Image (cartoon, rainbow, N blue to C red; front, side, top):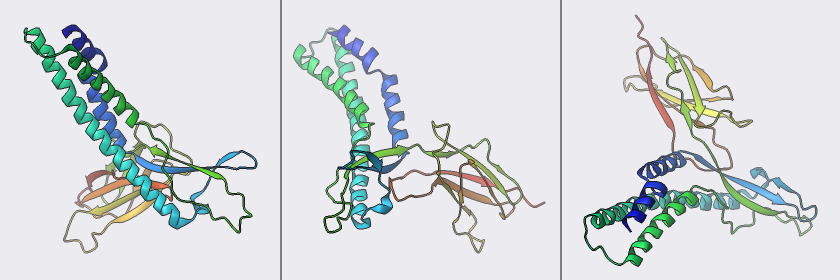
Length: 262
């Protein structure tokens, strides 16, 4: 039995694998989640994306609220699965140590059940990283006097990977900042994607220290002019919010200081 337990702990549910799970969950929680709506025309049987502008805005808002709740539940579920995974592995490792020391640790069937639960929990976590359908209870398209053929809609969650500053490339001069960013684990941006940089000076004595923002296109770089010399600035970056955004909690932030005016 000890050999069977050690094989499980050293091959299927290793400490390195659990560390990978934690990294995956952290990355997942920093992504932005969107709703993708597709319609299947009942006459032509063709499927196409449905722009959110074509939908009932009030009903769409309710659907997006439900989808946001769905994402939050999924993130919380991942956290609980990781806690359970760590506890279960520790318990089984203790059993293996006691067997090695010659202690009687219980029925073999009970130990097999615990090992099976550990494997099932690992599989559950891997499945929790997949995005599925959005549960929809609302009619999103108006039916105009019954003469319009309304397509059958399918709603899916999709994610976009987090936007992060390339800290080694960001430079502050006397009164200007040169900022660069990238999409984590992604080489190219999606067509038409826009980003927003917000910034403010970290000095309560400056009269206008409120947030300012600039929208940027696909070049992954921006110049921020008219800064105050010798001051610390906070910069944050994220995608420009769109109508299909459901949930986005994480934003990357850096602090940089302009050169002093000598």
